[in-house]
Length: 364
Image 1 (cartoon, rainbow, N blue to C red):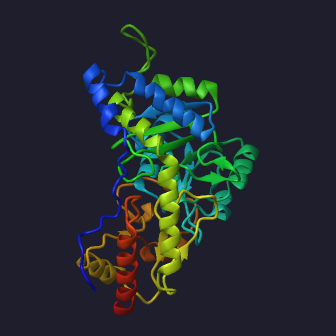
Image 2 (cartoon, rainbow, N blue to C red):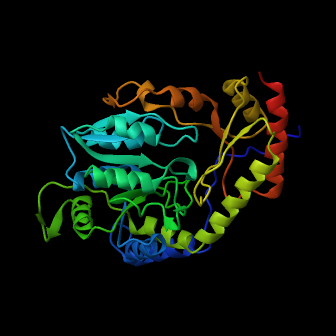
């Protein structure tokens, strides 16, 4: 194998007008959380996602907490979510004083809907579904379930920007949703995120809470937070959104190339929605050891990323076990992502596939 420069798991797309818009912020002195780019970014996102309200925030993690607080979810309440997810999903529930109720995953690494019903209790106030790796479980089922049981559906859509379910944007199906604009996301502002909702009252409460509950002058309508996005971050976001279709097209071609050319013994987890293909997910054969695979790919200059670890196996989280976890405990150690940035060239992709296909034959 001919080694080449190290290929990271994700390099962000740098939009044509990013520097121009950032310099405009600096030259105008509008660098904090007020300025025209914050408004522009929210308006562009609102139109793109097809929702009534979009509020930018400082990162994706606090956006989940903001939704929960604005819904009045707190101590004594329970929120159902999956164990196999990024820890921020579960942390947000604990950070408002509520209890995460963890359920198992299905074979596609998504929330196992058959387990959600078993986790329901009189204390349940919401289901927070983490839509992982550009995929999602059935939102029709989840919406019906939440409606029947008079609880909220919250979408943690951090990894699904630009994806659609039944022709409707992911992030527009529940009472509210959260997106992340971290450096490795489809659209990035470096750090940053947003919350979305069609509910006018909820949008008002979230807008109030995210900005110190400020109502004018030095008056505040109770305690709040500083979850605001800066004008500089928003300027980057506006420039990114000018290329969102181009970015997603590149991502879809990348995922297709991997699925068509990787060794047939490597499992493909193919999204069951119209996915923006944030980070395609693959699985090692049962007999292959992930650590050895990881070491060899690193030696050949390829960065790979393991699947998330189940939160129920981590120390320090206070949760209620809603179901057994036999599926996520079995599959998480075999899941992995290959480099997925939109800047990868055909040469990069060929090198990655050829190298991985050779390594997979070596490791036991």
